[in-house]
Length: 283
Ligand SMILES: NC(=O)c1ccc[n+]([C@@H]2O[C@H](COP(=O)([O-])OP(=O)(O)OC[C@H]3O[C@@H](n4cnc5c(N)ncnc54)[C@H](OP(=O)(O)O)[C@@H]3O)[C@@H](O)[C@H]2O)c1
Image (tube, rainbow, N blue to C red; front, side, top):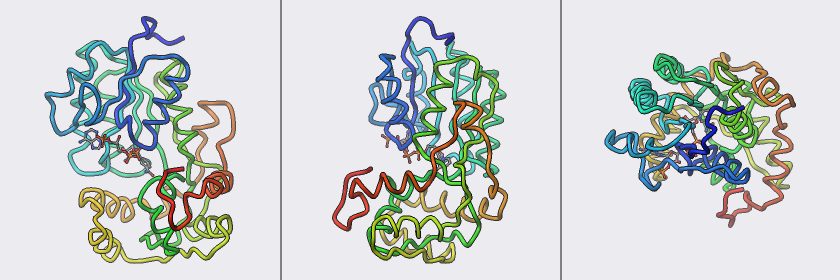
């Protein structure tokens, strides 16, 4: 069913990240060859160094495409240029991982579509795993999750579901042309989400709504990279106006099953000890 019949490797960009590494694990478990695309990959892939793009594409049959700053200005053009190169180099089968509701991310989706690639688009809401595998984990450990997220409900989606959809798309050409909007099955405010985490870990963890300015200043003080702070500030400012406060059916359409509930994610993550004050390993 996959037009990559020659068992050429799949290039997985952001292949060391929250979604990419799960895609790599799943493809590898199926015995499918993979090339991890990241700055530490072999060959290295760097979005900021175009000379690395063609070597990373050489000999691959398909690519999972994710830009680390897809909401920041300029990312759309960069992603479009990469997709054009991929098509030109004989790698038209692309699965694009991107954001939901951010203007630049959606411009990026269009730029990749304009390349003429055989494309599947994954348009995702906030990952549940931001609470356990990214730096929000430290906020949970400290007991105060201070984010500029107001009281807008969001349908947090599980990274495991996103990776399942990505792998389904990479291995079955029937997904070409589809745009899957990926959400979990329930709308939760950040306060609701943190309360569920607090209950699961059995100690007080509070959601503390802060201004975007305070969030950015504190994050920078704590050593969070400035581009990440810039991107998160932009996303918090842009998408938490209610535009994403609705469920979508991308997981169901792609996989024929329901998405995993946030509560199941929380219980499993809590059981690993990841939110204990001394934990360091990602769940
Ligand atoms: N987190 C969310 O809630 C969320 C929601 C919707 C959409 N998204 C989007 O999903 C995509 C993937 O996010 P993620 O959370 O899975 O990633 P992540 O866990 O933050 O990992 C980032 C990845 O990008 C790679 N990377 C960083 N700088 C790079 C560069 N200059 N060139 C090439 N690779 C680079 C990193 O690898 P190296 O450091 O090894 O290079 C790593 O594999 C992003 O576009 C993000 O905006 C995220």
